[in-house]
Length: 191
Image 1: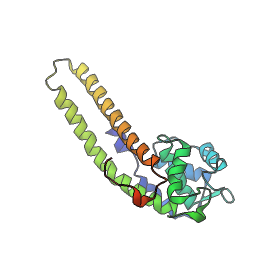
Image 2: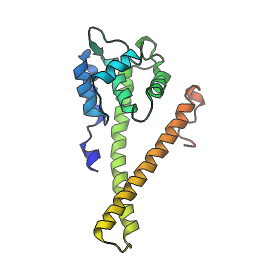
Image 3: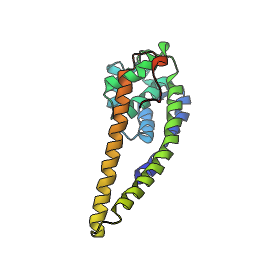
Image 4: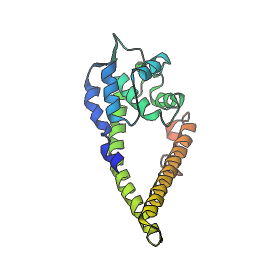
């Protein structure tokens, strides 16, 4: 619970996406504030070199680049950079060229952050429920409080990892079918 309570809402980055441009150090500061991933100047410069982002203009990143940086940074612990690029390229084709975008990356980040922030409240309730379920399961166990606490923590971690794995498997399934037309996808069914 402490972890969820210390996280900044993703929507805290939205005012920065209204700026015309930002220096690299400012982009890193914003990304560090709203992400659970460690990020630094080298990460972003590498993404530019690998064509996941357009080159900055006069060492400044525009709002579309900043939005893509925030999205890539959120995805990179779960997906490879190639998979993250493929996912973002599904809606905005060439990440190094904003002229072919189906949706402005700033809007994409806005929608993503709003949905994520609402979902975070559900996760908080779910974690509280998980802790209660673990305590209920162990209520009849005859062991020291110290042992019970260690077993409870282990059960919480095991369940969180299983949930994370389930979500990852569902996301991998969706990634496999990305090349299909969106109208052919069966959103929300069978997942």
